Image (cartoon, rainbow, N blue to C red; front, side, top):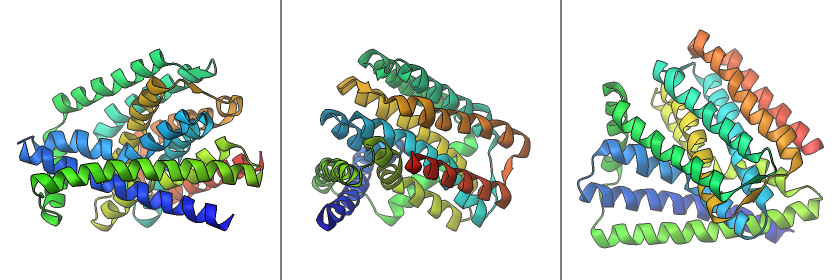
Length: 317
């Protein structure tokens, strides 16, 4: 038992390290090819932070544990909305950019709604996965064409700061970063899925519960680290945009690609409880953010308590 739990923790560490290596190597290659920092920020960094969810979900689907794959995304999305935003608001009030309310939040709701509808018959098919992933391509194109000057500057500054912290490596080193990152993601995902499923069966809980709790929190650590960095640098206004963008990538990219590889069966309990919590929790946030435009400590505590209640109900079931 102790060994399995240890291997699970090791798997999370290897997975996150692999994601960091993949982002570093891909960013270096993109810079050497002369690709603009704006495109790097919109694609490489965004894909990289969703890589842990993607590799875990694909590994779980291929091993026949669709509950882990689906639960991972549902749990990650709920964690992003309630914990990441709530925890930051408790530390420092969060200003919500108007562009996020006007554009990104409605698009996130549209993506989440697409996932809920796709899962309504109990299976997210390959065709539905293609539709979801096509939505991601459209979202990336729209972002590139519509991104404002302020957002463009913020994205470019973010990439340039990381370039200063870790200057581009040589071509050979970049290739090693990418290969090492992919290997780390594959090994980490296998360790997580195998040992998490074993632990779930030993403790008598469903694979879905493990997916929406332990695995979801583990794969959401990159977003949590980005949030902590934004708060430390006095830029909490980036937090909501990061959380919303991550949720949109999780649904359109991770669920889309995973279901294209292997159609995903969705448990009845997920259809009746977890998916509605994810969707309606997001729906409730939209009017609050529209009228308030600032997430203060009171709302932050409410978000954290809501997540605690969700976990309590999930585990008790």
